[in-house]
Each structure stands twice: as structure tokens, then as C-alpha cells.
Image (cartoon, rainbow, N blue to C red):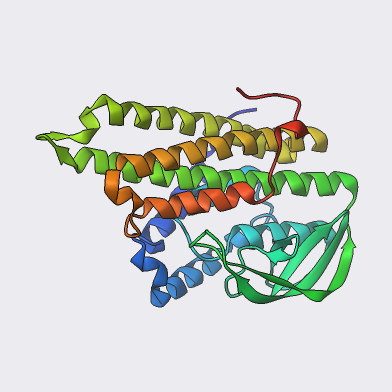
Amino acid sequence: MDARLTSEQLHLRDAAARLAGHLGPGSVHDLDDADRIARLEKAVEATGWRALRSDGASAVEAAIVAEEFGRGLVDVPFAGPLLADDLRRRLGVDAGPCTIAVGAEATDARGLRRALVVRHNQVLAGGIGEVVPGADLTRRNAELLDPLEPLGELPPDSLERWSALALVVTCADLLGAARGAQAVAVDYARLRQQYGRAIGTYQAVSHPLAEGRALIEGSVSVLRHAAWAVDELPAAEAVRAARIAKVYCARAARTICETAVQVHGGIGNTWECIVHVHLRRVLASTDLFPVRLEEIDLGFS
């Protein structure tokens, strides 16, 4: 495995980062800006990135975009439609614009009317109902409506690879949200003055931020391997790599976001401080396709 990104992948990362930085929410108040959301939706749709897998993109490239969108708190659907697109590709059917559902809830469902759900090895399609309240302020879940229409069955190998991709995309979102929170905290530590010095010069602030940076680097490594494994390793090994990545990235991202809240001191616990939006997104992505240590044969301390 070559962990380095190709020139094309670097260009993809930069393009996703520019889009997220330009049109993603820069503050909590921006989450209610309907005009910004409409422009963001139009821009994401124009890229065609929701159909990356149908266009022949690798899981590494899908993870690159998911990470940058997580970092920028992109609040229009991406991961759900991307995974639905991969399901359609594997089945060879055209189900129209849709997202995915987990259990009885459609995830990443803003503006969509249809969702695909995998039950055992069967893929079903259903309508999307009322919005379900949740902690994540950037993505909406909604009810999956009956009746469900069967679209086809996935072979075991194909189902495992799709499951690995779902975990990888979720890990990428975790890593991106954590990177965003870390960046906000570092900027604040440079600017905030206490006793005539920037608070980032104090070890009580700088050491946790340095540990967060180390966790980000570890997350990049484990995620990059898991993303590569989706298309290159046997399906069972790809799932195992993705599960390990999910456990590591989820723990790291939560630690990083909680540190970011603490670095901001009292204002870190206020509604106006955007780091809580990063933390909320991390908690939601952790609960999506959850992994228990019992499911993998490598423990973590």
C-alpha cells in the first residue's frame, strides 16, 4: 500500500476543502441561513461527488471528500447519497436521488424523499417522512416510511465491501469534524490573552492540543489504510480494517472535540461557540454504524 495521495487526489481534496470553506457554516447562526444552504446544495450537486462510486472513484477518494466536508461542517447531504449510489451500482438499478436508512431512520435526509435500507442481504427502498430530532445540527434524520419496495439482493462479498465503505465514510466524517474543531481551538489559543500572554503558551492548553494533533495523525493513518482496503483487500479483511478505524477515529474525535470545548473556557459551553457543533456531529457519526470491541480481534488500551 502506498499511503501517499496522487496528484489527482490532492486536487480533489483541495477542491472539496475550498467548497466546504466557502459555503459551509462559519458560525452557529449560519446554520439557519437558507440562502447559504441553497447555494451549498447547488454547488455540491454540480460537482457530481455524490456519484463518485458510480463514476469509478476509489473508496480513498470518497473518504477524501467526506473528510473535508466533515471538517467544514457541510450541512447538505453527501455521505448518505454517496452510500446509496454505491448500493445502486452494486445492484445495477436506478432508484433516483436517495439516501440510506439505518434501522427505521433515513440518515442525511435533508431535501430527499427516498431512502435505501439494507436488511440481511436484501436492499429495500422506501419513502422519507417527518424529520426526527437529533443532536447533530448539520444533518437531518427522518422516518423511513412503509411499505418498502425490494430492489434486489447483494452477494455476501459485495455486502461486506459496502459495509466497509459505510464505516470508512463515517470514519472520514469523524476525522474531518475533529480536524475542524482542532483548528478552531488552536486559532483561539493563539488569540486569547490571559495575564498578558496568549493562552496557547501555557502547558495546560498547549499539551492537550498537541495530543489532539497526534490523535489526528493516527486517525489519518488508520483511515487511509481502511479506505484502501475496501477495494484492494479481501472483503473480510476490509471490514476488519474498517471496524478498527471506526473504533480509533471515534475515540480520537471525541477527545479532540471535548478538548476544543475546554480550551475555549467558559464560552466553550455557550450556544454561540461553534465547537459544540463539531462535537455534536462527532457523537452522531459515532452512533452511525457503531462498532464494539468484541467485533474485532485487536484490543485497544
